[in-house]
Length: 214
Image (cartoon, rainbow, N blue to C red):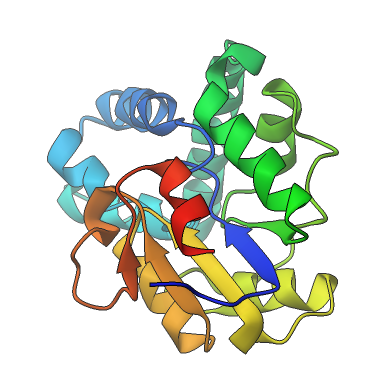
C-alpha cells in the first residue's frame, strides 16, 4: 500500500527516540514521595497524555484530595526530575535507522514535522542532535488540548502549510492514532498500543518501513 502525502508528522517519545523510562522514573519518584502506588502498568496509561492529565491518573490512587496549587507543584516537581534525567540523552540515542529514514524521506521531498504533547520536545531534540532538523515543531507549549484531540497535529500541519488530508502521522500511542484520524490524517502505527488498535490505517513493522509506503 502506498500513501501519497506531502508531509509526515512524527510523535517524539517512542517514535523518534525513547524517553519512556525517564518518564516512568520521574513519576515513580513523585508517587513514592506521596505514598501512592505506581507501576509500569499504570505508566502505560500515560502514553500520549499531557503532564497534568497524567498526574490526575496517578492521583486516582491517592488517599486524599489535592488542591490545584498542589497539583501544579507536583507536575513541576516531576518535570524537574524528568529534565534532569534527560540530560543523560545524547545523539547516540538516535538510531541509524531513524536518522537514515528521515534523511531519505527528506530527499524524496517530504516535509517533516513533529507533533508531540511534550513541553520538553525542543530540549529532547537538542539532546539527540535534531533541534534544527524538522521543518516545523508543534508541542505541548502550543496547545491547550492533548491527544486524542487533534490540535497538536493540526498545528503541525498548519505550520508547514499542508492540508491535513495530505499528512501522514506516525504514532506509538492509541490516543495519537485517534488524534490523527480526528484531524483527517492518515494514521501510521508504530509499536506501542497504537499497533493493531483497530483505528490505524497501517501498521509499520519498523521505522524504516515508512520508505515502503510513502
